Length: 378
Image 1 (cartoon, rainbow, N blue to C red):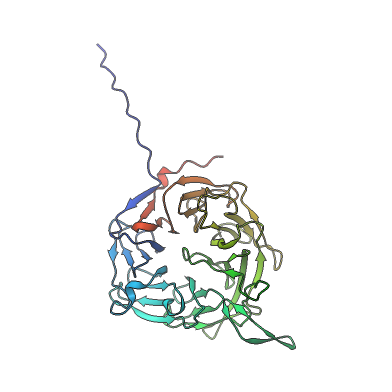
Image 2 (tube, helix red, strand yellow):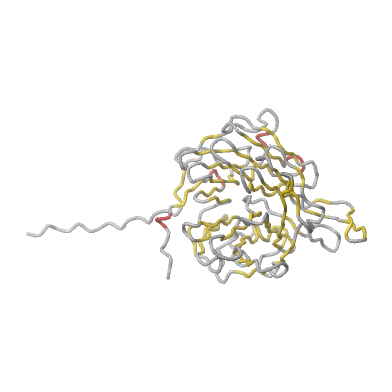
């Protein structure tokens, strides 16, 4: 007699993001994965976290300036070298924008840079090597400068800082020409969003970086700098600009928010920019573009044919997956064709990416599970 067959129970679908216990409920805004095992996260309330075992355990770090106002700081960015050394960026008005550095695994912190401009607001920090790094701020009012044979008033410019000693000291390197566009009343019409510490991108070679702006119109800026006598300095005109107004949503709360690049091919990098309007998280129009670096003055950005399913504050490229991943408050998406089309991954609430990790409000931390991804269509 044949044995009765037991009906097979359908297996629950695997989660794309495997949730981890962060031990906190604050909004996490910064994440930097060193190697998938060591990673650092940061957020509001002076919160900094660290893992050395791939996220199985997250350690709460000592608050920088715990004896004064450290618990009031909003750490929007973190850059880590290893399990011992990291730099965190506090973003806020005036002197609430600061950099702190630890070299003992976050037991103690040194204050290494404080913003002293009332209009300044630190937006993004990126270490381009173990020694060198760049920091950019929202535009501030400037002074007079000489262009050609005439003296002109430089009203608004993006302050740019650099380090050549691993973040122990910082100095301004812009030459006064890293200009922001202005409206008819002379106010800055451009700003940088400190949503995920990914509005600035190192292009991998030639001492070149890019950053994306929002506001009345979104622009992609390219900056070339040179390392002379161990001092980073802007090379020639500090920035060349590609206007991308036709691709991104516009307004005070809208524009480009994050950049990532596919460097794994011959030729110029392919840059994917994401953004939208953070007051309209479910609106998909004007949220993604693919930008090609052709030649000076001839770069172009084209809107995605199929955009992400909402505003996106962060994007990252994964060389193993050969795909871009974008995330925002209503979920995440993946693109396997350099940002031309996107497919949803989940509907969770997220702020920032450093693959394989993702962070969001309420202390949310997830780790990418590649096995749960749908296979690439060929």
